[in-house]
Each structure stands twice: as C-alpha cells, then as structure tokens.
Length: 237
Image 1 (tube, helix red, strand yellow):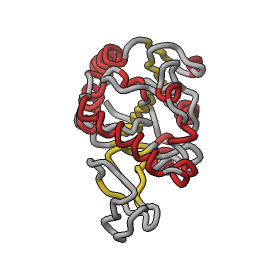
Image 2 (image 1 turned 30 degrees about the vertical axis):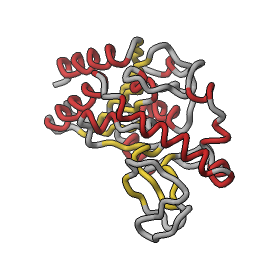
Image 3 (image 1 turned 120 degrees about the horizontal axis):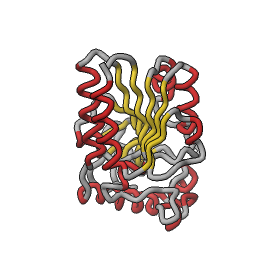
C-alpha cells in the first residue's frame, strides 16, 4: 500500500446511515429552498430561519451512526498509512460520521455542522448546541455574529490549496457517493488522472462523469465500499 490515495465522499455514503442527500429527486433541496437557507444573503436576511434549519440538522446527528462504508474507509486509512502510503479523505459532507468511525486525515471541504464561525472575528469553535442570534462569540464576545461553519452557495470550499496539492501527487483516486455535478469536486478525477492516478467511482448508479473513470462500481455504499476496500487490501502490496 504505497503511493498517495485520495478518497472523495459525498452524500451517498451518509445516505445509508439515514441522512438525506441534497440533489436526488427526494433530496433536501426538493423540500427546502436553498436560496432561503444556504447563502450568505439568506443568513443576512433571516438568520433565525437559517439557524433553525441547521439546528435541526445538527440535532439529527445524534440519531444516526456511521455505517460499514465509513468504517471501511477508516480501516483503509490505518492500513494504508501503516504500510507507508499517503492518505487523504476529502468529504463534501457536513456530518461527523467519518470522524466517529475513526477517520483522521480528513478535510471537510464544505464545512461541518458541529462547528460555528464568527462573522466578525472569524473565530471557529465547536457547536454542539443550537445556535441563535443571541449566542455571543466566545472570542470577541459580540452577539448576533455566529453562523454555521458551512460553505454556502457562492462561497469557496475550504482547504482547496491542500486538496489541489494532494491531487498533483495522487496515484489512486476514488469518488464515493457523489453526484459528479458539483464543482470543484466534480473535477477532482480529471486532476488526479492528469497526475497519472488510477481513478475509481463508487456510486448507487452511474453518473454524468462515469466514463472518465478507470473503474466504476455501482451499489449501496455500505455494501460496495467494504468489498472494494477488502479487494484493494488483498491486491495492493
């Protein structure tokens, strides 16, 4: 298990734990208007409504648990790095299921439900309780300045420099449970391929970018990912 392995995960991996996806026919944005809930303008216009939406999603985390796909990727990270390889897990998900399964080398490119950020001083802290406009920032002590530490529409994903640098030296790239329609993540496979990496897609169904992968596996993440990891561990020296 040498070389550099990058895993990209999307909503499909957490769907098997009971968390709704966003862009499927029955996903989150089919029930809610993202323009009212997931933009800086929406937060400025009605912060209480935005807080209520994300507070409900944060509370839901206590009702779900990591599934076999999350656990398989945590094991893959431990085994890969123990053998001297480089490993990075990049997730588009804002839940904490990867952490709870044991993943360590992890980037939440779209932020985290369990964190809050001050729009005045940019201080970031843990947010396990419900947020409101009355809660003061623990750093600058101002009220009416805390927002979910989530990347909203129109904002730049987090830690892109680190992700791009890792893709430049990637030898194996896998996209798991992601629609392949949201950029910049949808372009990661192309960047990995340019670096000479083998690219694998694991999804419930084929996507619009499936033809750009060397291998495509379809099925539920909780079934397909553990099988893929087991086969990878058997065949990789």
